[in-house]
Image (cartoon, rainbow, N blue to C red; front, side):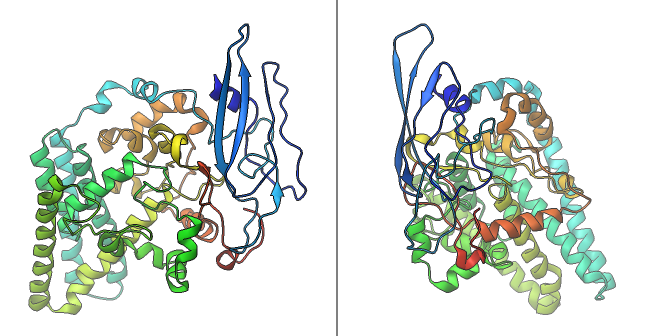
Length: 451
């Protein structure tokens, strides 16, 4: 009932900024009332709500710790006093994405047809055969023509296919490829090692990402920096992290050293990423990665380093760009700010509902519909070839918590604008508050406007 009151009483984001402090929040509801005390932006506060059920005398107390910017400020600047939710005033009728949903994870699961959960290893293998055949075919064509008209086209196409191989290995890591762990492990190693990804090291950290999606501190992939960590970065690191194209080439660096504020390596079995019984798996994957590096070194002697760079090196970095862009945009860049959680406000369901689906046009089928990301994040065991149907079935339950992706042309060029905008606006979150939103550093955004 408390979550219903939160939704109905209008705790909504502000579409425009009020320069003068507002006096609070009112609702016309006959069954509930809410009062909000003024507090400073980005400071942790407690919002108290009291609710009396119709026809009853029992009263419930509900508390919400929130924090978000009213406007981007220079770091260290004193925040002006402002009323509202998360530093944003509400507007009646607006949907609040941070409100606890009126449904449960089991409700979404029940809406998805039973056959969507069935894994067909033969069908999964057919995608592997298809993608591997295309990879070798593209390399043969490029080597045969060997001219500068063909090479750029080859780099884009082959980098995209490397990304497709990664997605199939990703399915092995989730166990959605088949019900056979040995098959998943063997194919996962072959697919990921071929593109210089340590399979088990990545699989374990990616599992952490799914288990903690939407959590400020515990998430593993493209999680927000706290203001304290952001301020601790040197200028060069800060510039590289938020200035394109550098963030889109960050994946190899992440594999070796993780994100700012976190320690460990995907190659080191003693890393904080892993528990003791996972160390043998990490050693196996690191050994496979080293073997692939040795194979590439041998190929450089056979065909020459320049030819290897053209056939493998440039496509590899195109693959890295695909991986970074796709994973970033599945958690950033919505036209309205989406919440990140801490403490008691975080839950698996609420964190998963902040993920985003994206349409990639012709690339959807090539990279195995990874753009259907919301249902995948909530239920990673669903095979990729059932994600579209499962998403359509879940939409009526999700309601406004599902954000329909913008339709793409043949190539998802529209996402470049979304990516650029997010890089200029989404820099850090407050150190305090259980519900926080991204804030912008004006020195990087080049704007003093509200976001």
